[in-house]
Length: 205
Image 1 (cartoon, rainbow, N blue to C red):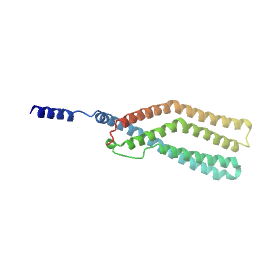
Image 2: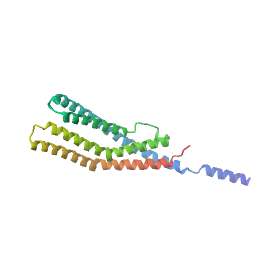
Image 3: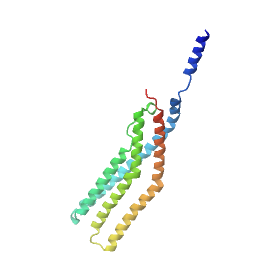
Image 4: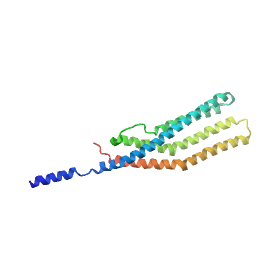
């Protein structure tokens, strides 16, 4: 009788023991879900605004191209084509960093968590690498464009136009990195660390 009672007590104690990984995951998830949703909303808004801005720019560039096509040589055409390619590629990379896949967060699988980590990695690359490449190539295309359309102007006018456009791009890039991108990278790194921690705690059934 004693043995049976001891066995029942041990069984009950064992059944009431909390599972550390599951409890900790449940505790972390609501906070992480809120942070992730807010972050994704910011990415979505940024991508939409960027896409609309690119669309407006493409319409304006197309108007300029068809209005002055006959007045300029091949550098003009190449620069216009470069503007289009750069905007389309950058927009594609930006949208690739957005997590379109939706899933019940509480039932997330390891694959789903890995998917979110990959998206965060893309967002980080966009800020630290692709933005730099985009700015440099944009400057090259803009320089080619300005040199061609200012061919008939004085040297002072041409160099002034180049200097102003270069200063604008550099200043915009520096301001963006100091004011916005450092905060974005911090948020991305924190979210990535949270997802990595949850991935380690997921119980594979």
